[in-house]
Image (cartoon, rainbow, N blue to C red):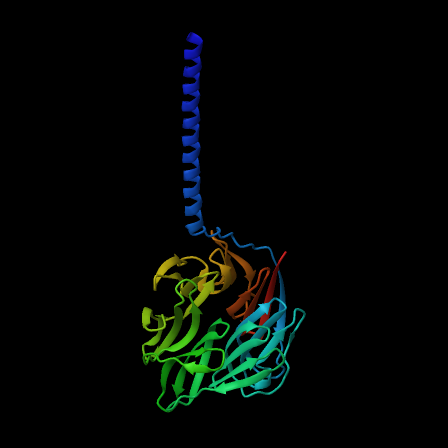
Length: 363
């Protein structure tokens, strides 16, 4: 009898053990499924931005337009072996320069251009904005006049900056009346077939730089009003419906720039970040050698900025002069372009009256 009772007791214990294990496994599976579902639905964490490297090897090329004067204003390129540089020249045949990975060349073909803006989508689609109301396009073989865009009552349309993607490019600038000494801001859009003017409020601002913010898809635009009191710097956002002023200050120039997927505005010693349709102070460089606008960059941890005696680099922690100017020369660097391992700057050496291309390559 004791043996039978012991058998049934053992059997009951075994059933209880199996039932407990089953419930435990079921609970674990439920938790696992819950975590898996929520993991799939959650937004992936953005990768941490790495600090930019500083081990560059530098080369300097002189752009030689012969006896003509030249002031390079814009850079664009699809790779380190395909870079365009354009600017104002005393003869239009020396306004467009190209780098093929080995040297800089000008085709010396006279054109009715006076470049002010440059932007590309690919090797076969590069756009040129001018101060004479025209837009030109490079189709992979040659530069061709795409169209003339004068507005009634104004002498010229000046197109200074572009940004966008395939079949959706925006341009910014202003229209000018010489007799009335009147300027009005303009925005334009290319839809894959033609350029059209966008209806915006009348502003006496000369739009200068434009960026499409990756997150909000807003246009962020900088410009200047030339007032008897001095330059009035303005920054606006445009969401497709409303043009909103988000910054205004007397003196200086503001530049809008995209660093990675983020939009920044640099003005004097200050750098602002564009978030939630407004500018927020991100960094103030007052009191150190950094005294100018951001030239170009890959991210907020890897960008180049003007300094008192050269080009400074920010790596997410500090600034360091990585390229020094000739101490006795009056020099200006306003534009640059970065690739994975290369960076190009245009240096205006006013002492010698020449344009230099500074090319840096990471080791």
